Image (tube, rainbow, N blue to C red; front, side, top):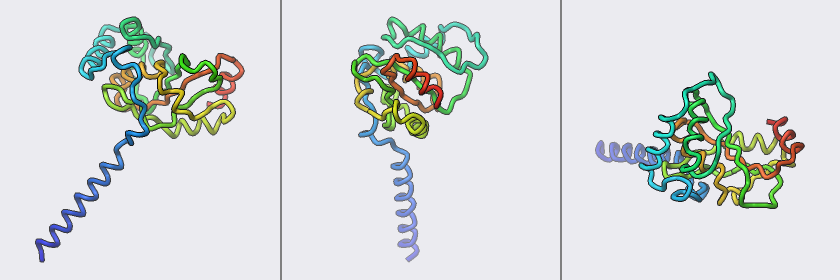
Length: 196
């Protein structure tokens, strides 16, 4: 009888542990797959991590105490990796709960709004950068006319994707807020900024 009770208790513990682990997993169907791995940056996790770490190691010394934003290029790492690292290095000593990545559109010429990524994460060879969904929903609520939730506009757009590995290395605990800005209309941008 004691063995049966012990077995049941162990079974319940194992079940609860398995359910807790499953609850912490990100649904693969709701994660954006990399579109430019192997093209804009290394496809191998080891090579990618080494490249980003080396760029950060060789980056310009920190000149700003508490940056609130950095502007970095989003081209292939062979062209822009070091300049990107120079920017990220300025913020590397800070702690952030989430990082907003404002990318520009290259793949959807008719999109004139601001596309917020509503999925769970962006996968890179380094793993999945989790999306801060609360901020996504707050932005959408603040400006429903100009902000839209659309995963398809992010699927092949590289401007946000190439930032994710730098964030994964420099700020491993930070979530991301992927945003693709489709319009260069100052009224729309100022309107969205006023609501943020």
